[in-house]
Length: 236
Image (cartoon, rainbow, N blue to C red):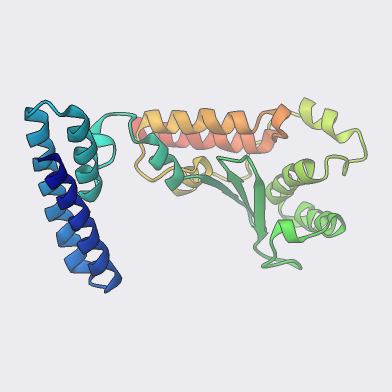
């Protein structure tokens, strides 16, 4: 019986793979549903016979085919949910900054001005200093974002005294209000996330923005602002 079950699952996988490669998306979707139901039924049969290890294995495969995540158990599928929002984005008039949640790496794009369309990682220190002067002339928020990037990439760019000055400077608020859409991008979570997910994303990001990790008081203030915007949304 066990060999028959394994053979049936293997045959189902082979058929599904063949149809997928043939670009028959609709049929592949139907086969996934049918295969998922069949696998769950087989898992139930093994469970009744006391073969719990096979029941969990085949049941997990069936749940995957049906698109279930973590069998509906709270917290079980958080690893896959994290990858959906693994990058936070903070935008100003000239700069869009990105923070990778997994690595803590920071990069960004220039949205306008002399370096429009360039990635920050493709600019040298002298070019970044010129961009900073451009931001300071007309985009204070972009200037703060770029300062945070320079602090990470070129720690000595301030001339030695900048790190201590930055640590003593309190977070400066953004010059404009933050929309809910922007708040979700800042926290790197999907729209409609519940309060627990909002708080968890906030905690994780604040760890990444700690001064010991090359953090930025301005970015930390934006993360705090995003949390407040989304939690206030739930109260209204």
